[in-house]
Length: 413
Ligand code: GCO
Ligand code: MG
Image (cartoon, protein in one colour):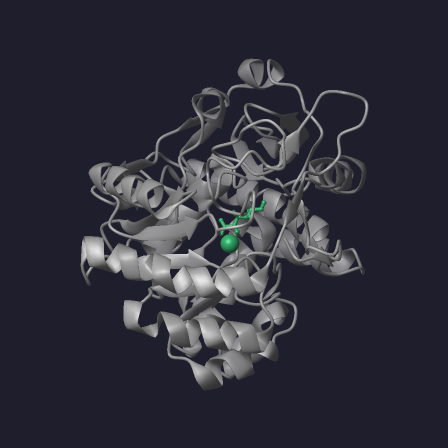
């Protein structure tokens, strides 16, 4: 299983993706997603310049050893760029091992623990009537759990509302990063007002429950914008509407902040999409300050890194809720689905379908049926990269938006 070549492919079929493709001497190909939204080329360089030379001639079957070699061997540990690069190598090696075994990856991870992974879709609207329509449309597509995001009176564009124009840039229904092909692309700037948000959001959930009843699992993403005491107040205010989770109530790096929120509310909490290592979670898990782990396979050192994290979460009865917006490529999504199917402490999987252009580049076999995702029984991850199609969509510089308060102060986006 000698690694003969490793190549980094950067392509932009609607949004940018960085992918690692490893080929063994006997022609088995493995794919790994290395996409870091708005910073794609940093991971591409980390891989091309520093990792690919180390991979050539290594034994592709030594997955744990390669993970430790790249993680400990770099000396400079953790961080989103490093862990995305480690993730891409790790996922590609699992793809190769499963293909060589003639099995879908979930079989190598212990086999299926369930028939499919409950997925949540993204409903949103600039106002409540548009939101209710969006929820109806998602229910018609089969979703059994729904994330709810709306516009806020007085704010021009808000995170998570599909029809936002990202501060005057091109309209993106699937991707908040503003792209451009000119010499200089700048991030869109949005404005934010937490007090207006705190006043408005409970009225949105009241309307949604009045329309759809008590059963439908509802989720919401606070996107890192509140202080701990504001988040505590929101969690309390939302208790009557029985949320599945409140996500990223405060900026994730301050783990201790969750203690304060937890003391005040029984609304379940999810956090971790910007984390990249199990050590980012130690306080949150050991003190049971959260209910769901939001990391992506892509940003957390791959299947190996994510498995280490989920096994520790399981000790505390905490479940998975893996990150799955469209900046997780179909390769990263497939890896998540194999883990979703296999681990005991699965909770829910975020899902946003990719665009037709993306699916032309990445040929997938996973399926969404009756609200559940299934990775398919194709050997390996079940995703192939069409290099010719990838070449038709060259990289375009793109940035996620930045946020400012009314007086111009930069705020968390
Ligand atoms: C989510 C996330 C995304 C992020 C995106 C940034 O819950 O899906 O918050 O929407 O904003 O991954 O690149
Ligand atoms: Mg989020």
